[in-house]
Image (tube, rainbow, N blue to C red; front, side):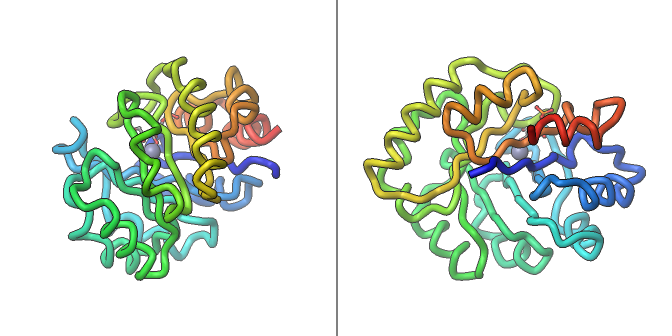
Length: 215
Ligand code: DX5
Ligand code: ZN
């Protein structure tokens, strides 16, 4: 299967989100990655439901929504109403992860779970068969433009094995520091979905960057 690219809006020009979404919309990138931060789970605040709702009519691309927030259960319905297609929560932010995952699916969305760089993939073992997606953070969440953590490759190898062993069909997504210097290696290590913020929106020619990251 060809990999999926999810440009991250976090690195776009916030004064012209219409143009940023239009750029992704007419590109071959399949998904749009939306980073929601609450200033508690991560040391930064980004944007939330109103922004997602505002851009929803601008494209039919999959809204890949990455919640870096504590107690995400409170907002599952609100994100569905805003237009999220995939809703990903952090394992480290959920006390009753199984319940959270079921609640996301009950709302008709695909359910994802993300793990921070320090969290071993083995922590996903029991939940993996229930998931549509696992998001492996390859930087510490909170900011765009950080350096890729090399230990991610070993986690991807272990995750691929675990997915096979548990009979899971979850997609494996990698987020943070992804660029043309590592995207092919990541796909070779089992990444199905690549998130790219700075390497797309920070590029002189974002459309060309998207094409390169899909090659
Ligand atoms: C970081 C976010 C990422 C971010 C990636 O906490 O989860 O999605 O936008 O940005 P880059 O691709 O610039 O590392
Ligand atoms: Zn993200």
